[in-house]
Image 1 (cartoon, rainbow, N blue to C red):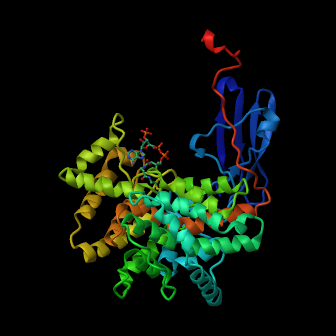
Image 2 (cartoon, helix red, strand yellow):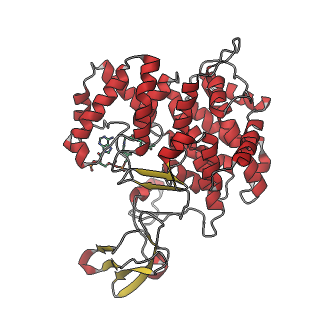
Image 3 (cartoon, helix red, strand yellow):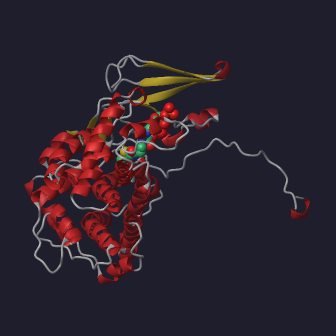
Length: 456
Ligand code: ACO
């Protein structure tokens, strides 16, 4: 909660001005921001956050002034209240439902975290057992649905297949269409968490022209996924506990990140009361882009390109700073973190021993560490507050586990799924939720008369 908040926004010729000068003594104390438009003054309520930035509620602005707000990339817009994830980008803090990410990564399972995000509290032993059982019960996919994967070319990117397949669930389970039917939503939640690893593994094996491996319900969530990805069906499967542990930590670290691009997409799709499956598919599509979840694949490709170029890290940094060069250091920078991404810190600590064990001296890790060191001491990166983000080291671990680069963003989607579901469900229970429908600042032609074809 900001103390003694004072901010000023003013516009041309003093026509618009906004002043907030409050002495914030308690969350309950009413606060307002005063906005002057011409000779009219508006008192806009400031809604307090339990932590972090409070919000000026601009809902009455259009009605009372005829003005909208312009905010590219929603950089300054809170489209919702949310009680799921707290993130403080200046201090590198991330918490799910109040619990620090470091503690959750250390002590919980992915399904426990999924439960926490979706239902708001950590499950007790009985709740966790029932929840895990339900998810195990739904891991299988129907034969007709399996054939869906065969329709895709083997060279298809697995994200394309996974996004289509998740959307396809609404065709196979048409009863799950009603966002306000609690039982439907519950079943769709379980199905999604249960089936996404099966779908992701089938998409992966399709790229290898291999038949899917059926789920093994005796295994833990992560071990079952590793088996469906890597098992040779003619040989017995033995789970590598370190690999399962690394995957578990990565899934937990990706499980939610408040109103990011893919989550906002999920909320936007769901705001029209579209069902949970297609809303998740929208999130997967948004995640795929290289500026968002697709960055983990790009990071590895960038490290490989630097290695192929003789390992010239300084050259890559030089290029990233050159405004005439579109090249960016992938895995660096974040809209919200202006400090080291706490997830990257945990992943980096996990990466070194895992890579030593699996690869010996890993040349890409060496390049990554060098790149980080050079970038963090370079004035451009320091001034722009560009630190490694979650994607910088995650790809190295995925690679050490044996995943090809095109699967990296799929793994991100598996991790993010509980967050998307939790956010979608929170929206459906929010009495103030409305269809997402932003405004625009029109800068096109004013009215003009139609010109017939022969006169143009
Ligand atoms: N390399 C070089 N310069 C960068 C980088 C980078 N990775 N990221 C940002 N900058 C610079 C920009 O050129 C800009 O400089 P300027 O103000 O001098 O013109 C400034 O930093 C601000 O950058 P924006 O693009 O305006 O910041 P925004 O908040 O819109 O974008 C983003 C954040 C997309 C993550 C950006 O930092 C980026 O492209 N990073 C690389 C891609 C990446 O790693 N994405 C994963 C993000 S984490 C996630 O989604 C899970």
